[in-house]
Image (cartoon, rainbow, N blue to C red):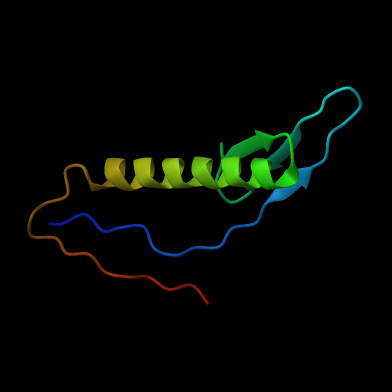
Length: 80
C-alpha cells in the first residue's frame, strides 16, 4: 500500500508575547501535543510552530503506516 500524504489542515495556535527579560515569543498548538515554536517575533514563532506540527504529523503518519498489510487501502475521514 502506498502511504497517504498529509492533507491541508488548520490548527489553533496559542501565542505568548515576550515576558519580562525573556525576549522570545512562544507559540504552541493545543491539538498536537509537543508542538511548540519560538522566535524573536510572532511571525517567527508561528513559522517555527508550523514546522514542528509538520514534523510531528509526518513522523506519526510514517510510524502508523509501518506493518500495514498490502491488502489494506487508504480512505479519508472527514470531520464536520
